[in-house]
Length: 285
Image 1 (tube, rainbow, N blue to C red):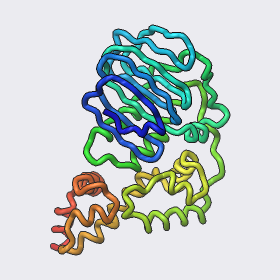
Image 2 (image 1 turned 30 degrees about the vertical axis):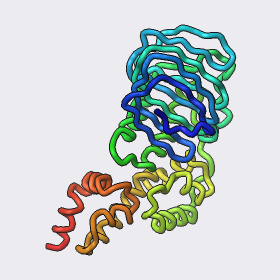
Image 3 (image 1 turned 45 degrees about the vertical axis):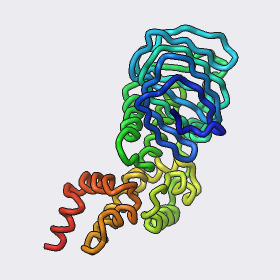
């Protein structure tokens, strides 16, 4: 089972159980249990894989290198560069797989991110920060109503972690987010709050910046990550609409960009300490 477009990334692998995925533009996040067997993969995206349970048997070949049998304890991160074939033969394990565009890594690491793709091994034991970010992405996918903006934000954070883990430092900050650019972005957010697939990449385009530098500069300027800012504005817009008792909760949820009424209620309660229904009652009291 797989939701991956073979034109973007071709992958053949054993049966996958408990498979959950998030697919958007050029980012894919998967959580699954893989049966024992062989995997062959290659595509236009970098693939980051973390086995949540250990392998007792694991052999792989990257590119045209020789097969290597190695130990792969739990929480080992593997990096498969875009355009390079990977073959794996291993026993069963639980996995997180994340597919990301090379352009993101170029914007994060710049010229400093140049792992030796001729090397036969591009893997490392995950540090606590990288593991926490990857686990958060998997948990978001496993939950009902994945938040695309949150996953995009976590994906940028993961790229920063992987760049550092593979021996580079994130690129220095680029140009600052000017007050005019910030105003354009905020105006755009306000006009697009009902768009459920609003993305950081889209907002970065309004500011004429890369998603990585935009996210960093936006938080530096506003004190909030783009994802958090958008969610807060959606909740504030929803509060205004809750004043109309005739308006169904589901309509308010979709009109303010939430993927479902359940997702809307969960986020609203987390930010306000009360449910939308309770807020509506207190507003009318």
